[in-house]
Image (cartoon, rainbow, N blue to C red):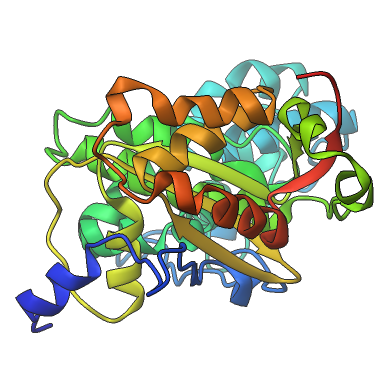
Length: 347
């Protein structure tokens, strides 16, 4: 894909409206809300039978084991979920097979005219791991773009081996992928960037699946005297996330969504709010001054204390419009649904 350097440079800036307010960008995972997770079984073909070899059912077992069911399930699970292969899983499950009283694998799984028992289990073992790999791929489009097809598949496969599925809900299966990528620097030189990009994409997934929170009732705030506002505390909505980064991952994500082919960016501080309005996902970039105020509010600081963060020497000169824009920020955050509840207290 041909990349326009000027267009990419423009994309990598914090988006701000003409009036100085933040300009959120739509996008993320809303188009996949109703999609079935990794439902297609990837094509797989067993090793062809060598010429002259007896058919798989030549040694068909007339009377296989019939239970107990719990042990049969344990054997099947051990073979199917083994990270290496079905053959390795069968070997690892020998103690369970012995407990079942099965002299051979064919006493547990019937062969058929095309495949022996081990080959039949290999179909399940391959399909199980392929589905988990696809689940990870589903959640990290931008990471996949950054890595390229082959390296992305390898990263997902390594994750599946490192983090076996431990529950029935595949919506949360890839939750460790950002942290996992951070440990892959030995073969992924851009691991630090990839980990942060994955953290942004996972925040969007969390927001997609979060339970709808209550809408903030501002009537008490509107009726309160101005001097009471300094003691105002705000509590975040379950459909809101706020992340800070050492790379401009939100700008990179937007460039990919815009059909560009951006390079891995140089490190630069960035902060992004991810939130849901109705069934759409939005992302909003932040300046350091905006982030300082919001982070204070999210950690439980009252509004007066949060606003005092703007006076810190570390923020001087970073946002010349901080004093005049702060109420604009605040009202936009409330309107965007960042908060679910408020408390008025003493300043």
